[in-house]
Length: 127
Image 1 (cartoon, rainbow, N blue to C red):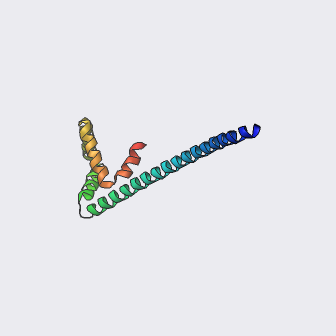
Image 2: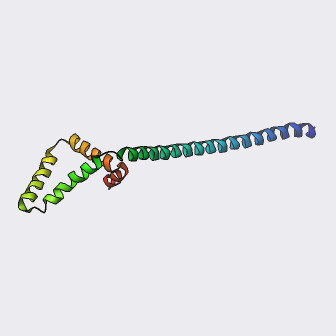
């Protein structure tokens, strides 16, 4: 009689343990798949950023906008050494720029940042 009960109980316990093991294996596989997917996304993101920077660097080789913005940004500094007239001119110029609409100031900042490199500007703005 007891032997007749032991067989089904053993099968039941064995099935329960197998189900538990299968569930653990499925959870581990899911975690592994998630980690692999996150890794692929990060790699793709880094590759895209590197490709974009390479394209921008290639395009700027024949462009004069970097030099234009460098000169434009250096003019106020040079005028500061031109006596009271230069300092007053620079001061009035910055006051006029502050009066410009926010969108214009933003666009000028973006154009300069794009010319010199977005990553450097982004680090500066985060401070």
